[in-house]
Amino acid sequence: DGGITQSPKYLFRKEGQNVTLSCEQNLNHDAMYWYRQDPGQGLRLIYYSQIVNDFQKGDIAEGYSVSREKKESFPLTVTSAQKNPTAFYLCASGQASNQPQHFGDGTRLSIL
Amino acid sequence: GQQVMQIPQYQHVQEGEDFTTYCNSSTTLSNIQWYKQRPGGHPVFLIQLVKSGEVKKQKRLTFQFGEAKKNSSLHITATQTTDVGTYFCAGPNSGYALNFGKGTSLLVTP
Image (cartoon, rainbow over all chains, first blue to last red; front, side):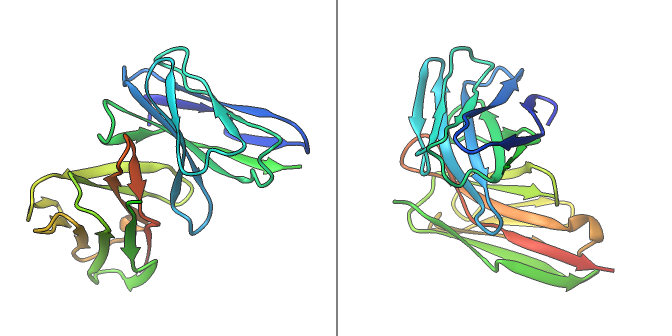
């Protein structure tokens, strides 16, 4: 989706290392979301934010952290506390909560 | 908490056959949304249904929202190889986000 940019496309993490996934949107959307996708598991919500400087934990927030200092940006940090980080991470945004979401191309994270 | 279940998990059809995926929620939904994810890609929004008993069509795709607003279906008539992918339904949860079903993966062989 041209309105949401995720980087990098591929990322490798070493044991004990924190890594940050970038998500930027130019759609002027208030709400932003982070999902984790594992094969056969669908999309599981990690964190979401309805407005700048505010965010809430989703279903699987342990081992992750986020910030929302700007409307356009919602970076996700995968901390060393996340013992099984290998997955496909998707960022999304929407005009408002519960409204249709636009997704970025995703970041594939693997452990070295 | 609110859960969204989808069946079947996988479906393999011959090109030209019809396909249907079903979505059921444990609670009444204010709306239901459908997304499609092509292999290696990201989910793309297809449609949102809001009204009880609503039926919407997009070319060969027909979407229905149940009378009780707890279930929905997506029907594809005469599948094509371009229909390959995983179809997800999603409904608002008690907070301010969406609960996605696990999806139905459709494989179409020519």
